[in-house]
Image (tube, rainbow, N blue to C red; front, side):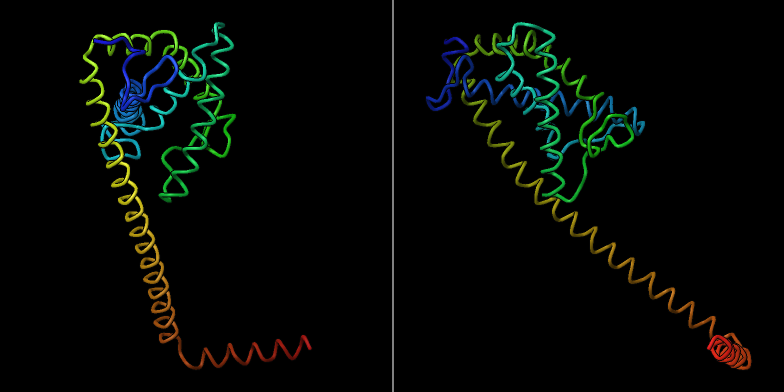
Length: 234
C-alpha cells in the first residue's frame, strides 16, 4: 500500500498529487456538480429533477475542471482571502471558456446569467463567482485533502484501475454526447426551417383567399385611385 504521493498511472506523476487521484477527484467533483445542478438547481428553477450537464452520464465536467484547477493552482496560497479572490477569478475564466466552447461546438447554451447583475455576456456573473470562490476554499482546505487521504488507504492497483475505467467512460460519454448534441442541433434547425416554410405558405394561401373574396370592382377602384394619386403627386 502506497501513499497518495506514491500512487501513479502508468508511472506518470504530478507534484504532490498523482494522476490517478486527479482523475478520480475530477469525477468526484463532476458528480457533485451534477447532483447539485440536477436536484437543488432543477427543483428551484423547474420544480422537478432534471438531468443537467453536457454529458449523458452523472457528471458535469466543468465542476471537475474547476475543482482540480483550484487545487493545483491555489492550494499553496496561505491567506484565505487571497485564495478566495484567486479562486473566483480562476473559476470565472474556466466557466466563461467552457460556456463559449460548448456554444460553438453544440449550438446550445447550457446556462445564462443575463438576468443577474454584473454578468459578462450571460456566461459568468459576480454572484456565482463568489459562490465558486467559497467552494474552492472548501476544496483546497478540506475536501481534496480528505479525498487524497481516503485514496491513500486503498491499494494502488485499485486506484489505478478505477482511474482508468473512469477516464475511458468519460471519454466515450463525451464523444457520444457531442454527437448527440450536434444531431439535436441539426434537427432543431430543420424543424425551424420547415416551420418557417409552413408559415410562409399559410400566409400566402390566406392572402390569395382574401383577394379572391374581394370583388373585381373594388380592386379596379383601388387601382384607379392609386393611379390618380400618383398623377396628383406628379
